[in-house]
Length: 163
Image (cartoon, rainbow, N blue to C red; front, top):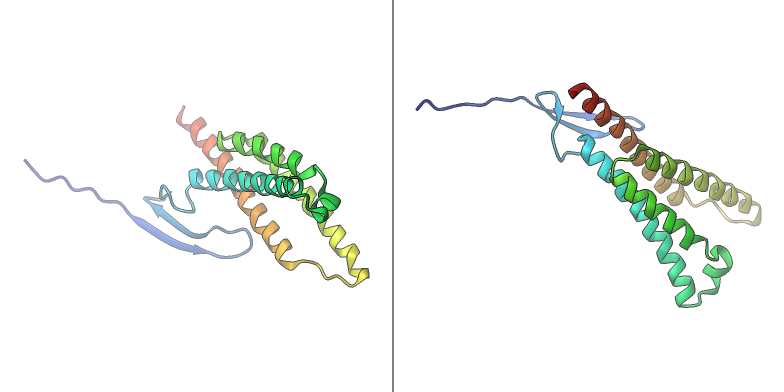
């Protein structure tokens, strides 16, 4: 029996610049499954970030209530529990490839970031400096969620083209 050979072309390219994906790994021009440029991976990453935001908010809310932490109760109240529940639902539907849920999560996180940033800059008059780590983290999370939304669009286009 003759030996079968298969060949494919592996491509590796570094994409740099704001909002770029970093290392783009392709096989025969298509993103390599499981790589950071794979649309499935991008969607899962975006959903995982939404779940992380849910968990983080729930943790703050639970700590504030369970351990009677006055600082957290005074500054956040029950809001983290509500926000955590909302992001938990949005994370679930984002993982199920809901573009609407992911966009709502992006909008809510953006609005929360703008409001929080405004509060931070308003406190500069009292001698506080804005938290640069907070700003950087927000940008990274938002970029990953936006890349996930783009990947969802790409996957939907691929499904339409296949039918």
